[in-house]
Length: 313
Ligand code: FPP
Ligand code: MG
Image (cartoon, rainbow, N blue to C red):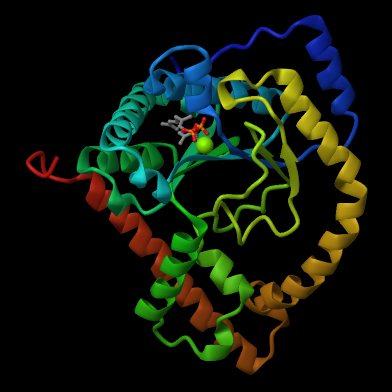
């Protein structure tokens, strides 16, 4: 199954989409794709075929997001906790991911034509070398695209992400001072980096938990839980999620304004250099140099992973 596919909308689906487009739309949606194994059990197929159907649903969902002009999608594909599943299931899932990322590399041209940028959020070093290699390539070949950001959390948990970012601050601190470490700096060290936080999180399968996913980034996100198992998610379920976002948007706007005022004060220190006095200017340079260093180090890691020797793989 290709990463980019052509979903044929029925007339009432187009109508529902056009009506929703008249209201405020989320710019960034996150998905917890849950329920693949229960789907497999109900359909009397192998677990891995349930996960494979889950991948097909992801590609369908990307088309819906493109049609709804949603610019960023973040999906939870593999938690660090998932390594505790049976070895057979873990191996199957990692093999499936390798197969899909190989396919993605083959489809570079169509992804670039559609402006899709792929980013993998997670502790890549926990993965097998061949998977690290294709993931790094997928990130590098799409890094100039900016029409649709697809972030795939793989070997990810929020606890791990936050711990890693603190380790990065300590390792690369350079001239950083204690007072430079604020919410702005920490969020710049997280995988999402300069992306806006998700406006809407959709979790399937009837579970209403966050499961250690984007816990820093979901502070003012609308949460939508649906009973549909991930492979069974329909366009109408998805649109109900967006409708629920629109209903809550008015309450959310006032909450976000309050949070923004707080973090904006910190951002301005780092971003509006022209209005800074001498001592803040110095502070800004320290932060700027540190963040540049973090970016360069991450890019070098990707380049290293793409050039892993065949023997390592
Ligand atoms: C959760 O359902 C799903 C997963 C742990 C795997 C999700 C993976 C995919 C959809 C494939 C994605 C692949 C790429 C390359 C992005 P579950 O296993 O927890 O099912 P259950 O809740 O019914 O037990
Ligand atoms: Mg589950």
